[in-house]
Amino acid sequence: MYKDDISSNFTGQILSLKELIKNKNLKTINEMANFILTNDIATSYSEILVACTIFLTLPVTVATAERSFSKLKIIKNYLRNSCSQNRLSNIAILNIEQKRTSELKTDKLIKDFSNLKARKMKFV
Image 1 (cartoon, rainbow, N blue to C red):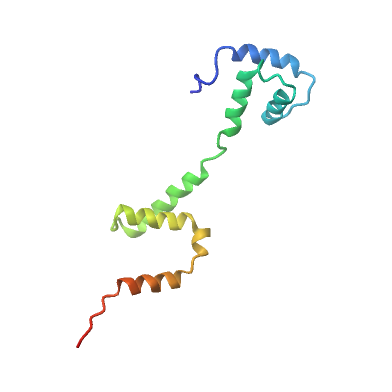
Image 2: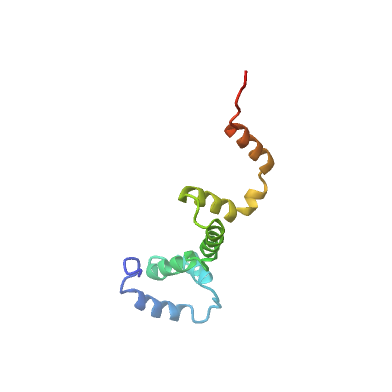
């Protein structure tokens, strides 16, 4: 998957670095990347540094995306597919961002919206 980022020199660099850090007490990938950077050996072990960077930037979980789809499923079942895609997306965003939505003054928003959309007829 990352063949453009890591070349065939990677295996040789791992074996070489293994001998170098044999007596060091490095327990995490982050410590190994910091060791390479602080000892100024990044040019010699550039492939390992790239691999460490890729590893450290990968997300641990996809819980946010799963939560979003779960909320969308609940909303879509509730509305029984009776609303447009745009409205459904907006409702999903409000539901996913519940923390931010709870800070809104919904009563005022509803009142302002209803005043904008009110169809008042003036009788003479």
